[in-house]
Image (tube, rainbow, N blue to C red; front, side, top):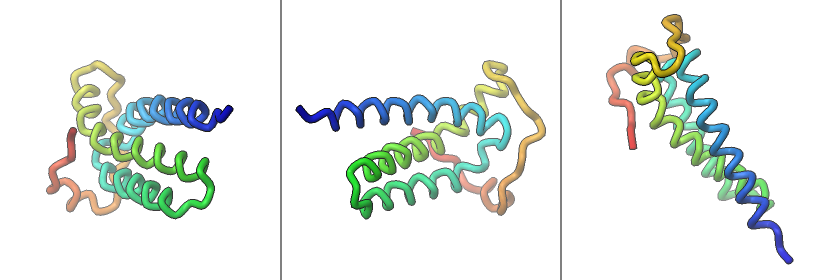
Length: 110
């Protein structure tokens, strides 16, 4: 019997579940303007998964990369939820590098 698929399923489920947590916490402390950096990190994880020799590493990098890309698109929507009072709001967020340029871009959404 091969349990690789079941283990990958459980690990991916955990990674996706942690994605919800880091989006809520990340937006609260850093703000949604960090989305380009999060998306870049997700793309790098997915590209890295293509070159990983081990199936576990490849699957984990792909799942983390997909979760990061999804999270980058969800940060703006989480900011709106925080402003509506659905989640704790923090007015003192850490601005990312190149914040003036990033503010001109439209945040991605799904």
